[in-house]
Structures are given as C-alpha cells and as structure tokens.
Length: 559
Ligand SMILES: *[C@@H]1O[C@H](CO)[C@@H](O)[C@H](O)[C@H]1NC(C)=O
Ligand SMILES: *[C@@H]1O[C@H](CO)[C@@H](O)[C@H](O)[C@H]1NC(C)=O
Ligand SMILES: *[C@@H]1O[C@H](CO)[C@@H](O)[C@H](O)[C@H]1NC(C)=O
Ligand SMILES: *[C@@H]1O[C@H](CO)[C@@H](O)[C@H](O)[C@H]1NC(C)=O
Image 1 (cartoon, helix red, strand yellow):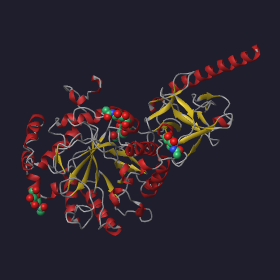
Image 2 (image 1 turned 180 degrees about the horizontal axis):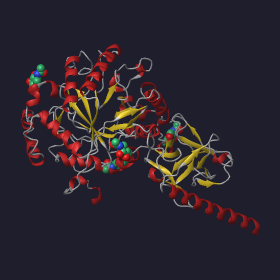
Image 3 (image 1 turned 45 degrees about the vertical axis):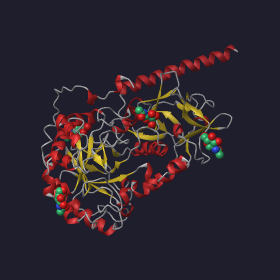
Image 4 (image 1 turned 90 degrees about the vertical axis):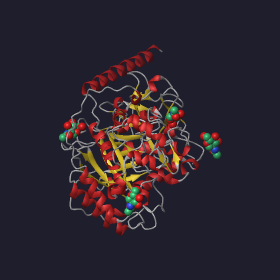
C-alpha cells in the first residue's frame, strides 16, 4: 500500500474552519427524510459503538475524539448511529463512574495511557459526561447523530437469552426504558445535530409479541416526542429487526405526524450460509422478496426505511459476505435508502472477554488510524448522496445503469469509444423505453450488443433485438440481449473496465458460480446533470454519429 492510503486521521490536523451548524430538525415527507426547507437529507451513517462493557465510545484510547469525528465526514458519511446502553441513563451509580475507573474495573490498565494521551479531557469525566462529550464532538464537527438504545445492560449484543431482548426480559423493564428514553431525549434537546432516536435495537427472544410491540413502542415514541418534538423516532421490528410485516395491516398510532421512520437490519448471516452454498441469483431473488414483504413495504406506505445495520468483512475473503453485498448494493441503490454501515469501529477495548478485538467489519483498522479497505469506501461512495427525492428534481427524471460490484455506473469513455464504468455523478443518463431499449436521454442513440466478448456499442438503429435489454434471472439483475444470430448475451464488465457482452452466467442455479460482474440495476435518478455539459455531449454524439454514417455511406459507394 502506498502512502496515499494513509488516512487523514494520521496526519497532523490544523483546522481553522469552523462550520456554522444550521438548525436542522428533520421530518419525513412520505418515504423521504427532509430538512426544514423540504429538501431531502439522505442519512448516510456509520455505527459507532458505545454500549459495551466499558460504556465509553470505542476508539478513544487510539485517537482524539475530534479527529475521529472529522474523519467520519472525510470518509463521506454525514451521520453516526451512536449506540447507548439503557442503564447508563437510568442507573446513577453507573453513570457517575469515571472513564478511568471503568477501564480500571475491567483491568484494562494498559489502555489508560492511550486514553490519557489522546483524550485527556475525557479520562476523568463520568461515563455519562463522556457520552455527552462524544455527542458534542460529533455535533461540533457537523455530523448528524442518531442515538440508538442498543441494549439495557452494557455488553455485546445480541442473543435470544441475554435478558435484553424484549419487554419483560430480566434487564428490560418497560417503565425503566421509558424513563431512559425520556432522559436521553431531554438531555440532547438543545443539540440540534441529534436528529433522531432509535428506540430499541433488535427486539427478539421468547417474549416477543406483536401486542406488546404496539403497546410499548407507541408509548416510547410518545415519550421521546414529548421530551423533544424535533427529532425523528425510529422503530425496530421483531426478530432482530428483520420483521415489520405485522404493521402492514395495523398502522402504528401516534399523536404526531411526519416524524416516524422504520429500521431494518440485513447481513449475509441473516440467511446463514445460503449465499455461499446456493446460487447467488436464486438467493438474491428470494431474500429480497422476503425483505420487501417484511420491511421494504413501508416505503409504499409512506415511511422512510433506515437500514441501520449492514456490513461485510472488509478483508474481502468471506464469500458469503461478498455475494450478499452485491445484492445489497443493488437494492440500496434502487430504493435510494437511508442507511448506517456496521461499523466505524476498528477494534474494541474489551468485548466478550477479549481485549483489543479486531473488528473486520470496521471501516477503520485496528489502530483507528488507517482506513481498513479504501476500495470498500470507494464502492459505497455513490450511495452516500441521494439519487432522487424532494429537492432533487432539477432535471427530467432519468435512469442510471448501476453496477453493484463496483458501485459505479455506465458512462461513455469518450465520444466515439465504448462504454466503461465510472462515478455515477459522471454517468450517462438513460431512458428505458417500454420496448426495453436503453437510449441516451434526449437522443435516439441506444445501447447495443455487438458480439460475444466485445464491447457494447452506441447504436443508431434501435429497433432490432440487439438493442432490447431485458432484466433476467431470479435476481433480475442480468441485462440480457440477443445478438444478430439470435444467441443470448448478458452485459458484463471485462478486466479493462469496459462494458462488454458475454454469455450469461449462473442462470442454471449452479452454486459455485458467482454472477457478480454481470449484475446491473437500472435505477431512477434525478441527480442534476449540468445542462451545458449534457447538451455539449449530445451535440458531439450527433456529430460523431453523422461522421460515422457518412463514412459508412462512402465505404458502401466505394465497393
Ligand atoms: C436543506 O438542504 C438543502 C440541500 O442540502 C440545503 O441547501 C438547505 O440549505 C437546507 N435547508 C435547511 C433549512 O437546512
Ligand atoms: C448500577 O450500576 C452499578 C455499577 O455498574 C451496579 O453495581 C449496580 O448493580 C447497578 N444497579 C442496578 C439496579 O442495576
Ligand atoms: C478490500 O476489499 C476488496 C474487495 O472485497 C478485496 O479484494 C481486497 O483484498 C481488500 N483489501 C484489503 C486491504 O483488505
Ligand atoms: C458451475 O460453475 C463453475 C464455475 O463457473 C464451473 O466450473 C462448473 O463446471 C459448473 N458446474 C456445473 C454442474 O455446471
């Protein structure tokens, strides 16, 4: 790795910039989260863990809190889902332990030097004040904050038998929980950057039931709203936040409107090893079908869906994760969802008996200094800004052809050449016609299959079958066309990043086969494309095509 991979966090920071933080109560406008002027605000968050045994936001032994906060923005996130254990706010004895004592109590003596060096202003604060200091640092650095009640009793989450799973469990008394929610909502009422609270993470276990869900979640939502009417209230479903299906026919009843958001979690292991042991087209199709029935439907009901946990082993070695993530990316782009990646954390102070455990799902590496995998960040960067939504209607709606495996979109390399993948912000704007033609918006030129293994071309005669593109397979993510000889091909990407047509992969349900390179999503976008740029572009296509036609014409006459 070259020096360019050294993360900003490691460099000496001198910041003369002071952001002016705008008051930003957020609300909802149908399925979108919007700001006070009605413009969409896409929540592109990362989870920062602060609910484990030490009850201190992770990483403070490795980096100053402000350096971490700034780094979050530099990585393209605009928000943090900051977890908290209920008892930090309901048990005064716990709340008043100092950070130093808490490390000492767990015999994490060696961590104390790092804490002293990096965060001398936090080390002797009480645990509750340290939590406030982290929130203040995020706010001062212009990061939005979602306060997530992750668990009651500090520690790793979650299991069916940890006593933290559902109302009535050993550590989950609904009254204490309501008190805690009220206390947190009140404590941060003046902190404008605290934009939402998620009431409880991953409800689960033997006791879970729909009646109590309504009873207590509605009560919790009202308590939060009464204490702070500005913030969004985020509700988790049952079964580890994978199931909201019961709300389809029985809407949540609240006294307030335009503040309710639902959340869902989706990992590869939500389906065991299915991704690795079965055909990815099949699994992607089935899992997405379930996901839409269990949670995705809330979008149609006019609520935002916040994917508050997802993630992968960033070493790229987990096949189950890799296959799942191609499917995830297509889904997240298609619906332009709000989300929070699991996780920021490079390593934990102490969890499940292990000191300094490496977190391979973390965007930062073990020392909280470098980015663990910069190509991962590159890959999710297009999802960090909105494709569409209120305030993003400047031009006519168009389509982008998105490639989940790279996180890039199809664009033309130059006027006369083939198509390549590039940043979605520079991508071609397409129209997908009822005849399944993909035409460049505002022109009659279309995407055309030429030959097996060769680049897809810009076509002029768009009525033949080689310019019809169907979405096929169980995943619906292959774009398939027919060559002149009638054979089927699928859009693919070759090793030079060129968009080509190849034989369609993995349609036979072969489980050892990975179709990832052939997965594309035709997604809706209203992202602004500069008018001058696009008209220059279209003019030059015309002149290029005209030249080509003339050349072809003269060739024909020569022979
Ligand atoms: C709302 O968001 C838009 C786009 O980010 C921004 O230009 C505008 O200033 C915001 N309005 C408020 C009141 O924050
Ligand atoms: C409150 O926290 C202290 C310190 O962790 C603990 O010893 C005590 O058992 C807790 N009390 C309750 C009621 O949970
Ligand atoms: C980053 O992720 C990619 C894709 O999964 C993988 O190929 C690569 O080896 C990873 N890099 C590091 C440094 O882990
Ligand atoms: C399944 O796909 C792999 C890799 O593409 C291939 O090597 C293998 O022959 C295929 N198996 C069957 C039964 O088609």
